[in-house]
Amino acid sequence: MDNSSDCDIESPAKKPKVGRFKDTAGRLRQGKENHLSHRASLDWRQDRERVCAPQMDMVEPVTLESITSLLLKSRTGEILLQQAMARGLKIFYDQQTPQSQFYPRGESCVIVMNPHRPKGDLVGMLSRELRRAWQHHQGALVNPMGFEPDEAVLVNRAQQADVFMMSIKIAWELKLVGEAEAWDFMVGSPMASIMRTFELRAQEDFRSLNNGEASRAAYDKFFEGSCTKMHDKRIIHQMLLDDAGYMKAVRKDKRATMELFRKLGELPQGSNYLAMRSKHLPTDTCYSSIEDRSNANFLWFIKFERSFQEKEMQMLQESVKASAEIVDLAAWSMRSHQPRP
Image 1: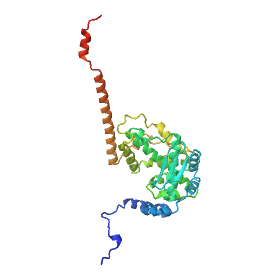
Image 2: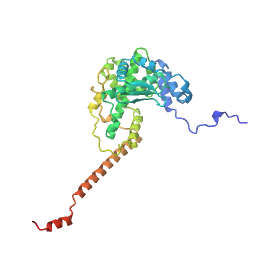
Image 3: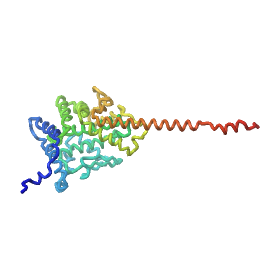
């Protein structure tokens, strides 16, 4: 008689990778006063497969009204939300969206979010998409694919760092008024180091919330470690897909200038955090250097392929120009021997 249970029929061939889980657990244990007020963040990451299962459709999701009413308790969130709604922005739930997405459609823009996410996560996602909506209205939400490869990586990184900084800023403002759900959720996420940097600067000097110092510190922290790896991979894959002819395009006219970053650093209230004096300018190469070997190799291939295509086109144009200058000797000889009138 076989006494093995159903769960023993298929045993994993390899030991599961628990490194990231250990890192998350370590951050939770080392939290303020060793408390687990951000337990929802840990539970979500432990039970993602169960939460994302089809049977979860029967669970009552968090209402959009409760999320927006919570966001209104943040000064920055209130400005972003009210201005966006005044411009006709619509917010919907969409089960097919893994997290959240902003769709620019002229003046009638749309934000969609996955309804089966924890409330703290939904507040953070809505904060990021509202920031994108605000940047779109300000003309700062440019397409990174309109730039050369190195600058495309820089612009994409800057846009991602900006929206994450905004979600942290709004979560901190909510925490100050006693609504710590969004902050507690993000503490258990890979953004914890960025949040800690923002928190330390804000606690040292409360004026840093409005003069841009706390925001700039969090922005700079985003570029350290492996925070940029996933975003680099996505933009590089978009270049390789070549749907819009990026690999064969001629050199771009757009440049990632300080003017672009000044637009990106504008805040609904407070100083421009990317225009303030700092150790490095936002255009510095330290913000665009790629440490990941795979991403660096693919980016090198893209730049090589574009350079090869450009040189090939240049040689083709020169050959056409040279062929047009070839003299027809037979016709010239006949014209030269014709008697003059």
